[in-house]
Length: 270
Image (cartoon, rainbow, N blue to C red; front, side, top):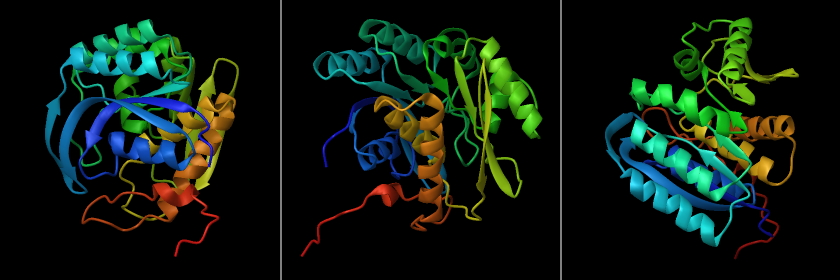
């Protein structure tokens, strides 16, 4: 299998392997691209929750981004967990130096178990500085509520919140609808010229750990290979749905999904 593109992932690590950098690397690899990383935090967690978070020094995050990109220039960048003002500031300055056009931001703010992963000052800076620099932002419902300070209970609320994010400087927004308890999951893509609603069947399972990280990495990978933004979102959603459907049922809490669902091995292994 020939490698299609190069992706730089800026995100936190998940020791249980279901979310964060680990999910990102698995996704990028399974979809045929080359993953590089800049780790922003190390977490100790499992499917039941987060035990601890150790921040990486902003200078080291910047070093990872710049030093890696100087040698192997990424075709696209995926950004995940950025937990403090200093980290966001460091990432923004690093992005200015490496000049990569295709950037997807997954504004990770709350862990699956409810642990808050970002402080209020950091949210403010993310909105004022980082959002303008990225191609696409992919918040889930709780994240969109925090960013827009609105309550979201309907499809119309999702569109309203997405338009608010466009006002803050976002170019394209994909709000993920998994938190709304409808029979179908509606993910809504919005930019200044169009609205597209992706309707998909809901799979009744608690094993959805890392779906947000996985989706943003999948979209970044498709985008890096030249797919248009809306098509990249559609393909990313398909990949995640298949990963949820075939999840391995690991762990006692919110288990991981199956990142290998896209792999088709042509050769028989003895």
